[in-house]
Amino acid sequence: MTGRGGPASPLPIADPRCRRTASPPRPRSRRGDAASWTDREGRSHVSTAGHDEGTGRHKVVIVGGGFGGVQAAKALKGADVDVTVVDRTNHHLFQPLLYQVATGILSPGLIAPALRRVLKKQRNVQTLLAEVGEIDLEAKVVRAAAPDGQRIDLPYDTLVVAAGATHAYFGHPEWAEHAPGMKTIEDARLLRSRILGAYELAEVSHDPAEQAAYTTFVVVGAGPTGVELAGQLSELAQHVLPREYRAIDTRKARIILLDAAPAVLPPFAKKLQDYTRRTLEAKGVEVRLNTMATGMDADSITVKGPQGEERITARTKVWAAGVQANPLAELLAKASGTEVDRAGRLPVDPDCSLPGHTDVFAVGDMVSTIDRLPGVAQVAMQQGTYVGKLIAARAKGDDTTPAPFRYFDKGSMATIGAREAVADVRGVKFTGWLGYVMWCYVHVMFLIGWGNRFGTLYNWVRSLRYARHRGHRLISVTASYDAAQDDRHARSVDSAHPHDPVEHRGDVDPRAAAAPEDGPARPAASA
Ligand SMILES: Cc1cc2nc3c(=O)[nH]c(=O)nc-3n(C[C@H](O)[C@H](O)[C@H](O)COP(=O)(O)OP(=O)(O)OC[C@H]3O[C@@H](n4cnc5c(N)ncnc54)[C@H](O)[C@@H]3O)c2cc1C
Image 1 (cartoon, rainbow, N blue to C red):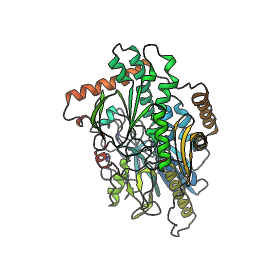
Image 2: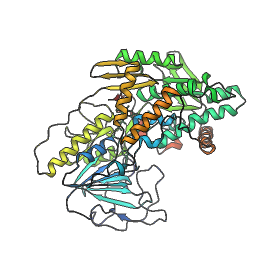
Image 3: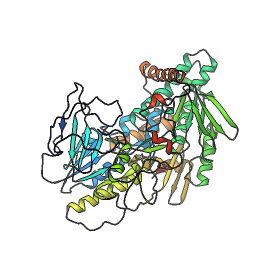
Image 4: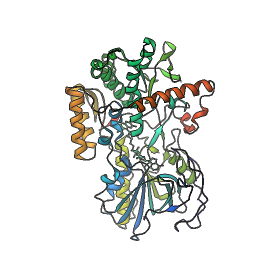
């Protein structure tokens, strides 16, 4: 098995297209590792999930059912090909609204419909739940692990890899413990437990200093995600929670948003940046610019800014600062003799194919293009559609050289709070209520399924406009306890390794060190 970023060496299989070959059992990988080839009883299997028993048609394997992968699959509707979409989750996640799950506005199901349902009308598509750990470009096989560890081999004629990105902690992987980021539904749920659990723990504390530590929230990174989260944390503290707690005044909660850059929403126009900063500050958010995190533990964060270094006591920290391409990018780069950039992104040719491999395409957050496109949903979607159409044309026998991929920038937007947002649509700038209505419209329309659209609208009207009530705040003693346990665990690990906190997070990609300002920029919520 190749681990994260390892070479694409073939597995010990005599003929990759012959199935059910016993490879030696290997230990199951830890959760989160790329793949494991044995089931819970330690048996080794190779399955194709019916993928190669078929029609004799051209086989397309798509790795990742996110924005890029789903659009590629949709563009292959009606094409004379068999498509297999393999993803390690069973849902298509609309990441731009994850922060609303983390702050109790939306339930996870509204932004994460089942992938099978999304693609159910497409008869030529099969969907598989499995984690891809290896891609053998020579044998043209994708190797994945099913939830029970069973190995699944997926032979392909054409491959599309759209595996997205993950967090980057700028050379401090140990910070992940203290400042989780938001990339998955699980991340958003964990964050919701930490945020709401912090208020619960403050309510039962008798120590004012401890109460203050629980009700201080620090968001690192003032891009769209950081701004949106800080705005909602303020809404919670100022408008949603005050009448519900007896021992604490939630309006005294501190929400700090910091960024090493000199402005919030760095890629937006200055007018929109200034509006955003003013609006956040009016909501009680402390905006600290030119300020970077230099240290972190379970109880605090140390920051360095124009006023020097300061240790802020805060139990809840959130990471919204950096991203790193999925490790499959490096795996593909090594296998094809190219090199990833500082943010781990795979360089692709103008038609999104892997250099030297016209049958392998990569799209979305995990790739870099000559025109340095931002890591936003629109880029991934448009690249996915482009690649899907290209494959469909080839399936029809059209082998002409395709026109290079061209990105059509529809605009950028970010919300700050209820009724406040900024939008830049092809140079025309909107703020306030108008920006907010535009933001709502675009985000609702990009959700998949009318049920989810109406459900989301209903929740917005209820949560943000009228009652300012959050209907999805479910946490439990276990959940808050887990969050507190995480804190305690982190504290004990910190004291056990005071000088070497990196040691216990060996599973985090060390390339994060190389990501600071060159990460796949996700500058904007694009329309
Ligand atoms: C919190 C947040 C907010 C955002 N807000 C916005 C916004 O407002 N506007 C905007 O335009 N963009 C936004 N983005 C960025 C946008 O979501 C991404 O640019 C987009 O998701 C990229 O699409 P993709 O297909 O490359 O990857 P993704 O959509 O991330 O899809 C990758 C898929 O690959 C799967 N996968 C990964 N590794 C494996 C593996 N080894 N095996 C099998 N499956 C695998 C994952 O489960 C996932 O389903 C936001 C991102 C985040 C995290």
